[in-house]
Each structure stands twice: as C-alpha cells, then as structure tokens.
Length: 410
Image 1: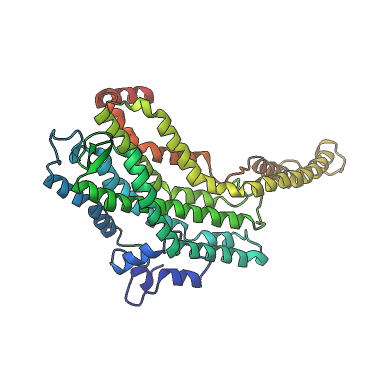
Image 2: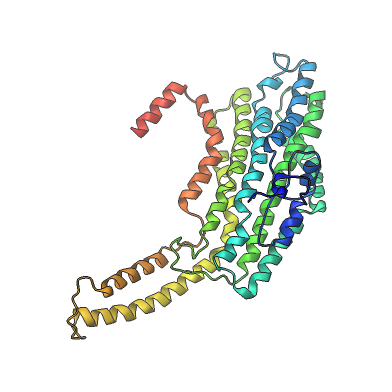
C-alpha cells in the first residue's frame, strides 16, 4: 500500500497518529522521541525509509571521529600502544557491523509485524466481545513506545551504568590502547577515548537498550492478548490452533540476533588477537548468548502456552469422543454387517470420512504449546552464531577448515 504518508511527502502526518486511528495496525518501532528527531533531521520518513542514509550518518558519527582523533594522537597503528585503533576489531565490528544491523532490524520488524493485530482479527481468533481489549492493548503499547520518559531513563541508564560502570570497569581492555592508558589503578582517556566513551559508545548502547525496551513492550502486548480467551481451533493444520503466523514474527528479529553475534565476535577477536586466548575457551559464552537470544525472541511467545495446552486437551477429549462414536458405527456397518447394506465398500464415503477423522485427531495430537517450530529456532540459533564463524580461522587455516567441512558433507 503506497500513500503520501509512506513516501514521507509534504502532506504526510505522524505515523503514530495514523496508526492510532487504525488500532488494528501495530508497529513496535515507529515512534518515540529519537524517531521524531530522525524525521526532523531527514534521516527517516513516516515508513522508516531512508535506511541507508541513517546507517551512514549514525555509524560515521560514532566511528569516523575515532579514526581522526586516534590518528592525531599517534595511536592509529604502530607499536606505541598494545592495541592501536586499526587493530581494535571490537570497535570496528561494533560501529560498522553491529550498529547498522540494529538499524536494519527496525525496518524489518516494522514491515513484518505491522499486520499482527490484523491477523488476530482476520483469523477470527478474537471474540467479538473482546475486540476492544485488543485495540486497548495495542494503544497501550503505542503509549509506552512513544514515551519520552522511557527514552530519557534509557539514556540516563546508558551513561550511569553502561559507560561509567560496565565499560570503564568490566569490558575495557586492561592494557594500553588507542582510547586509554592505565594510570594509578585506573585509566586515563585519550581524546579519542573521550569521544568513544561519551559519544560513540552511548549512541550504540542506547540503540541496543532501546531494543530491549521494545522487546519488553512486545512481551507485554502478547501477554495482554493471551489474557483474552482466544478462539483456537485444535485441528488447524499449523499445529498451534491458528497461531502459526506468530512464528514468522521471530524471523523479523534475525538482524537483531546477528548484531548480538557480531558484538560477541568482536569482543572474542580482541581477546584472541591481543591477549593470546583461543576460541575454544569461549564455548560457554557462545552457548549463553544463543540461549539468551532464544529467550529474548522466543520467550514472549510462551505466554500462549497455557491456552494452547488447554486447547489440545479439549480437542483430544472432544474429538476422541466423536471418533469413538464414529468408529463404533463404522465397525457395526462394515465389519459386523449390522446394517445389512448392499453398498459397495470401494469408493464409499465412510472410508474417506474415517481417514479424515484420523488425520484430524493426529493433528491435535501433534499440537505444540509454543507457536514456533524447531526449524525456526534452529535458524535463529544459526543467525546468532554466524558472525562468530569466521573466528574458526584462528584455530586452523582456511584450506584445512574447508577440507574438514567437505569431509563432513561428502
């Protein structure tokens, strides 16, 4: 659907206002003070277009001054410090790969999830009496998503906790780098380090924390919808009572998963290249990241587990009773000959009905209590660890790695 609003034309209104007039639509990302700021700066429009412009501008604001200041400070390359700027894999991955992925994720999530509430209605999952509750849940999500207070608190959290505590005390390398020099039990920041710690890093951490806040909003919305008695159909072929469309929402978060994988890969690369660590030492960290991202993306869908489990139990009971009556009549007619009918068995509709009933019962037996498939979860896990895969080259040469891979496949 193409409109002046989607193109960001002169007659375009605020997208949040447009969606508020149509509460059946839903956007997890199309709103908030930063979004409004980006619109005024012409880095986005009402439909989150101009993505390349946003990526280039935001990434360069975070990364380019570091390059210039590190060069002016004589710490761009060389042996003056243990980790010169160009050899700091973590910072390049963070601002040139992970940050763009966080921005790409916004458009992907917006486009793939905006019809979520409409799907609940189109599939007749919401009883007519509860439609207003769905609209109220969506409107509540809008208010939280657009909250100025929430983003101010996120920004404060980034500077107070993310920069002052986490970065300065836990994640910074304990050696002379392009951004800091150890001094008297602490560290002294260079000019590049000041920009890194108080401009670049806060921008990145704010974008990241805002995603966690959005997932909180997403989880809260799904929880509110799960409080409605949904009209689930246990014989639905998607094996989740008609909620199969929710599985597609998990794929929308793949760029976000890859951004987290890239963050881990950059951090591990620094430790491997500058502290002599090996990739095998970080198996637990990789596993924990995968589990955390599965919890982050798939966890919100667990709110529907009670209703799905109840629908399965009810379906097994009701269709079990129906099947019992049908097979007893079938047995009487065709096996015991109780009907005295001369109807030929070949081509009889009774046979097809028996097969259809068996198929329906099997569908109910195979119902899942989580609306996401194992294949989807595997794909999410692969997306998370994909950025770490190139670090396998630190364990063995590419030629040897390819030989082992070919040996496994063929």
